[in-house]
Length: 213
Image (cartoon, rainbow, N blue to C red; front, side, top):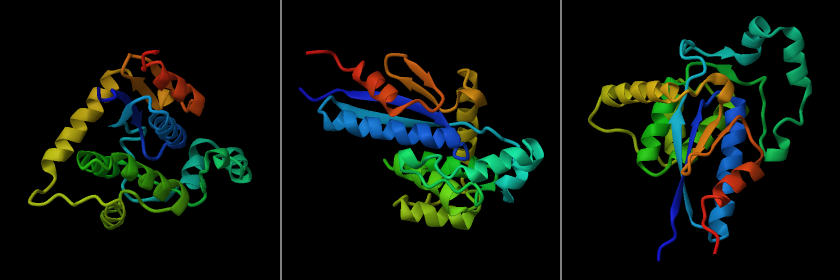
């Protein structure tokens, strides 16, 4: 009998560091689950925009934080060089460019249709938090999609998938997902984990989907 494939839906924003942490831990937990022979895991990425009104032109994230959170917060973040290290992440907030994530979410949706959603999301997270790339820029997105092996949409102006993304963003919010609950992970049995949980929490949730025996 073929092993069962378990489903885990993660609502995230690509400019949310908690989402980057949670996504990284969830994908590792899924790899662990598969390696143990406990069945497959289908990770479904659902879009959320924490700042839907953000401009597409990039602005240094530190400058945005200075206005919204104050200089003391910026200094605290800048001085903490250990954040993310335990998860193998190289987080360089001083490089990050605050921008609108709509087009990046469109790219993830296209990649998911080609079986490359996880790879594309990881590359976009890294582009934002490590490389300091503008993830709303069409040229940058085209290059990143090529790196991830995602084939560009042909013969369309993209209107249909933009409309579908807007509808999906609305559906995710209608489920009660909000900024403070990101990342929001729902497993096949209805279990929901909010915020960047430890990897062990995701492993346990996946293990609970597998019947004993």
